[in-house]
Image (cartoon, rainbow, N blue to C red; front, side, top):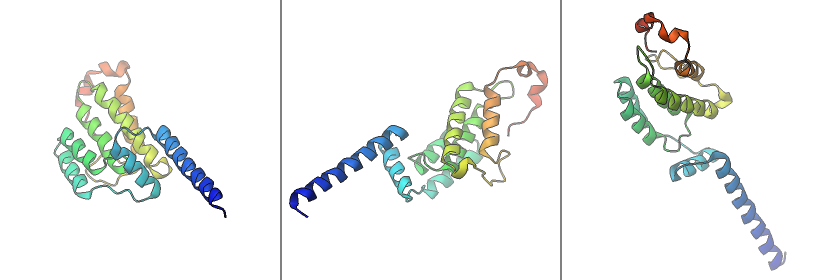
Length: 167
C-alpha cells in the first residue's frame, strides 16, 4: 500500500469514528461528562456501579431519607445507566411524593420519568427487583402507581382515601 492510501484510509476511519460519537451523543443526549463516559463504558460492556454507594443509598431509602438516598444512588450510578439503581431512584420519588390526602405531582412526574428510563435500560424492557422490603417489585407496577398518582378523577375526593397505605 502506498503512503497516500494509508493516510486516506486512516482519515476515513477517524471520520467514521467521529460520526459515530456524534450520532451516539445526539441519540443519548448526555447531560454530564459522567454520563458520556458511563454511556461509552456501557456500550462496551464495562460499566459498573459503586456497590458501597448503592448500599448507602439503600440504607437511606429504608430509613425514609429519600433526598439522601437519591444522592447516594447518583454517586453509585453517575451515568444513570443501571436499571436497578434507577428503579430505586424512581421508587424514592414515589415514596417521598406520596401523601394520604394528595400526592406531590412534581415528585411523581420525576419518578415517572426515572422509571421509564429504568425500563428502557432493562434487558427486554422488563425489570423486576427482588427486595422483600418493597411492595412494588416490578417497574411496570411502579409506573402504574406513579401514573395513577398524576391522574385527576372523582376518586380523588373519596374521604376513605385517608385509610389507603403507601406501597
